[in-house]
Image 1 (cartoon, rainbow, N blue to C red):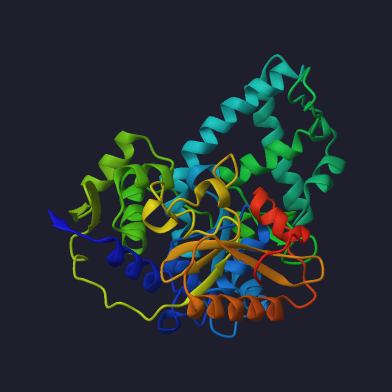
Image 2 (cartoon, helix red, strand yellow; image 1 turned 30 degrees about the vertical axis):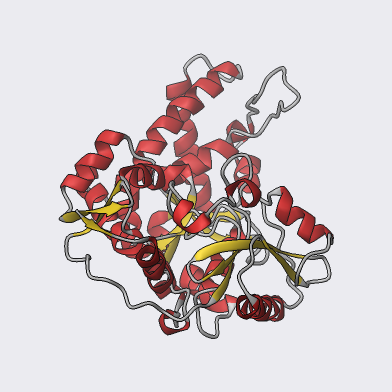
Length: 397
């Protein structure tokens, strides 16, 4: 096998993920297509990830792509995570990942309905609840979860989570039924309740939002199509990386890889995979700093991250493996950042990268603070290191 060095992998990363000046995007769609999908678990991540890779980016441009032109769609996908994907890729993600998740979640919800004492026939009850919820959303045109619960008493039924523990909660049935309807393709998430930093979305029937149903694709073909897209952006990658990113079983990942024309490369003793026509070396770009947000798709792009993360995982990721905001220099992670209550963007470097790199990171932090203006971003996932920075503990920046 031909060897692919760490330097080559980093050069590919910064060029293909638009982290150098020469490859920055002019539209949100270009950004999303470059990364296959953007993490949307934290609502601000989609906007900050797009800002970091764009020229003259404004939030309204992404909002128009999501809610006006609707060339981007927010949906559940890989690893049971919320993503923003190109509209034309939504059916592929649905068939390759989401329907499997939906089937598993339905079984889990049936068990929860029964355990909560709602009914002794949870499957039939859920069928009726799904039909009722869909009618309620269609009647309104769009609706928040609370609207549906208010309109349909059956969907206000309380489910019991964590019974007997200090985490016990009693969410409404609607709060579980509506996301599952979206996972099955009947609903999509529309505009948020307030601004782009808010994560409570309106539910809208898929046909009304997109003008058509998602459609049903063959899962095997869909997994191959998704993997082909992903390797073009993230290759080389190991089988472990592929399985982890997509949330597939070993059998599913291997079958998808077999269906894609690929080449194996040596990653310093490990076997990596690239598309068959993607083995030529990359022109090394000039070094550039980047500030990427919580759960950015580049930071979270691979399971085996040592080649770009070094020894910083325990500092920059939380105990569940969620990445906080990261500082990048020349294709590798070198620190973390946070926004303080006064709006200042502060950072701390975890290694000596030289004065040129420090000045570049300082300039990027100032640029981000100026772009955010009066907006305050409070990530859902903020490891202790970045939380200390946000709280005002002294660091560079």
